[in-house]
Amino acid sequence: MFNVNEYFDGKVKSIAFTKDGDKATIGVMAAGEYEFGTDTIEYMSLVSGSMAVILPGETEWKDIAINETFIVDANVKFQVKLSEDSAYLCVYK
Image 1: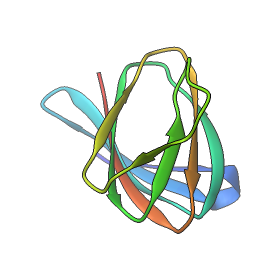
Image 2 (image 1 turned 135 degrees about the horizontal axis):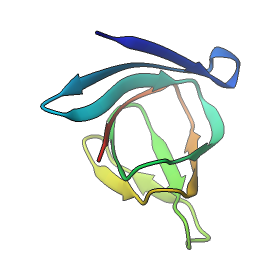
Image 3 (image 1 turned 120 degrees about the vertical axis):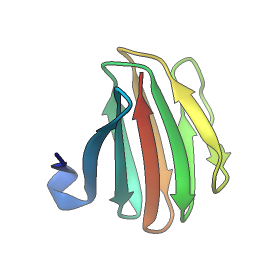
């Protein structure tokens, strides 16, 4: 049914579920900087709080607005920076 995930010593937590064949997670991240790796294409949306990202091939932080979605390719690493505790939705394709 649901899978609970925890990363970075509990600073990132999510609940995973599947809807119409698509895997998704809804989660929270404590303020800080994190690097994630992808296995599939990810559509990530900021639900609340604040987030900046550095996507593959980029060198500068890009601010993400609440309800904005950004796409990360499969098999890459990307960085996120949060100035406050924040919530996100991620859909995997």
